[in-house]
Image (cartoon, rainbow, N blue to C red; front, side, top):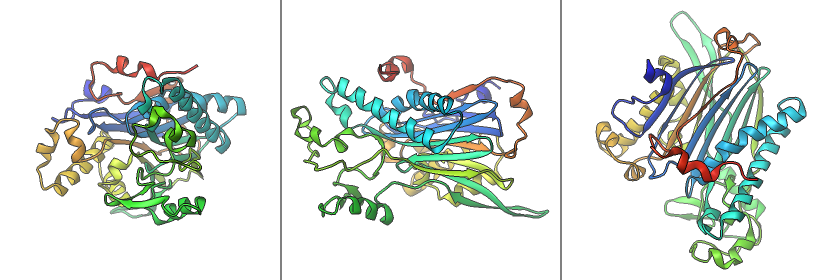
Length: 373
């Protein structure tokens, strides 16, 4: 019972954390994270109240600082601007993204003398919000939100399709590559194919993020503090942006569940495979089940046994798979009838994945990335 309430107990994988099942205003949700890097660069969080549900998946790169920073700033900004505007909207979400980006830039400027490498740290940022039977999905980078939508039902089975709700801002996608190239018509090498993938300036695959200040502020390429970055090259203009793609959708009775996950999951499972697993599996521990399915696929690709992958320590695990964060949101009552179990609580609830899986020094590790004034 304690395992079900507080996570952990992941069947021998000491790098896997999970929260099996908790209520939100429209149903239940489940969250799981598995660590591959020496320092966990993924962060995930869920905020629930009787009137709204917020989901955040933040996939860091270059270090954990940006994803940890977003964890402490984005939801408070959302709440602040939503309160000021009298409700949630695309403009409220965009303002919250902009404010988080600006505050992280402020942190970089404060810290760069002592830690110049922080200018190269960034994070993808995927946010889902449900309020008044409306779903908002905002995204930077290549984390992904996928909807399981019922298309037919009979006595024997339910047929559900996978509907992708977010845009992968990854230049491996031809359309995204064309978008970046169109913004830089005078730079024939804005996107190059290197080390087996397409990368902006040969450095990074995603075109949108929070952070990555060294690719957004051309003046940094002329600053002596950053000369030790061998990949830094003079920039005429920013080559990345923090402008989110935002989708707004009125929830319908056939919308059954949502999967929010970092690209570590989608590297191993297709949208359709993930939806099929959620449809055919018990609710309790569903996020953990998706993570395990991805890990089993990663082991198969490496021609190794899953139990041997689970024994691989963090750091070395990164050669087998990425950090993976998964949040599954069930939509039981999308048309105004709140879940009675949750409504009786009449309070807000917050779940955040550990800063580092089972770290004994979570608070010490995270203090420097809390609110910046």
